[in-house]
Amino acid sequence: MMQTTRINEMVASSCFATPEGADEFYLACETGETVSFEKALIKLRENYIHALQKLGLSEKTLVFCRFFLSNIINQKDALRSSDIFGMVKRGAVSVIQQSPCVPDAVVLLAYHVRGKNRPFHKSIYSDGADTWRTGVTVKGEHYSMVWTANFTGTGPLDSQKQTQALLTSLSAYLRSQNVNVRENLVRTWIFVRDIDTHYQGMVDARRDFFLSQGLTEDSRYVASTGIEGNAAAPGRLVSLDSLSFGGITEKQILPMNAPDNMPPTITYGVTFERGLRIKFGDRSHVYISGTASIDKEGKIMHGGDVENQTRRTLDNIGMLLKNQGASLSDMAYILCYVRNVEHFAHVRAILNDRVPRDIPLIALRGAVCRPGWLVELEGVAIIPDANQFPPFF
Image (cartoon, rainbow, N blue to C red; front, side, top):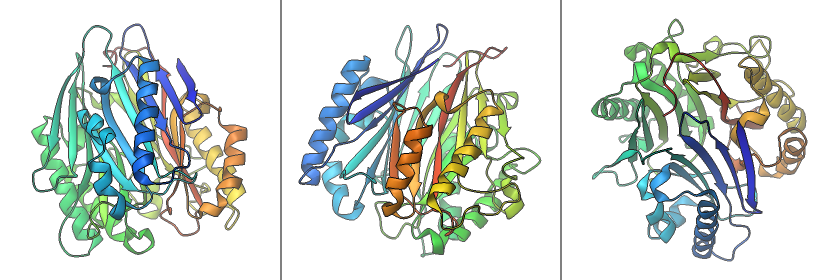
């Protein structure tokens, strides 16, 4: 059963636990208004440590986290030298420029897993050539998790070529961890600099790469969010974070859809699933891809109207969840992206009305892949399940 908690005004958390499996936690940590980025990092660390103590967690249980910055070029060095960055090196660490909609200098999303009887074995990956690129492999009794962060492609300022390069390097890294794209990759987050200009090149490269790996509309794609965001290096047009599960079978991976609300994404030439459900013996993870105000024909609904776009987006997510026996109350976290930060007050009022209050929710400035979409939501739900597969984790 999902339990959500407001640790204080700056930190919200969710926890899912069963008698058989591991405990999973998501934390959304903010700082409130601060006079400098350095002081914000100190405050963020204080809030994070307080939350860990309240929840019985530590750096040892950390698996993945993401820092959302407002000015990555001027903030990345201070972040890297900060005490909180030193704390989170026990997991995969993503860093992206997506300005928080609230007046924070920095926001942190963290994912922790706590075993019942013993700590999990973790191996940390860092790349000597690209010091921002990180990964972690966590091995449990039945499965492994492979998280990657900040994979980017080098080369000319061409989003298609850079995406080809980063996906090729991702595939090689996954193989080194005894997983692969076709059988194990389930979730990606793809951040595109100046998305209105560079999105199509990423789409084309991803489609060709997935085809080469055997991911097609007749097999499956992955859950994904494609959104505007800037990586640490200004010449990197595309940055990618990902999640793969080792030890799962194809029968455990279920593509999600809501045909009365939205068509398959391949209808308009993109290659990701509306969502994926991953079935474990005691629970299911329900990964909701980036979702916007779209109708069942693939057309934008409520052009120029951010309030009704937000309502339609929630309706679309609600139907994806309903078709899996879930609801918004089962969400472990939600990310909200708005194209214009001035719209967030209107978006927030609707979210406050329809989303349970204590669910970790982070609101960010991030342009969606179509200029007409003013808001996008994504996240993960965790629901109880009972089947023949081993429990998580």
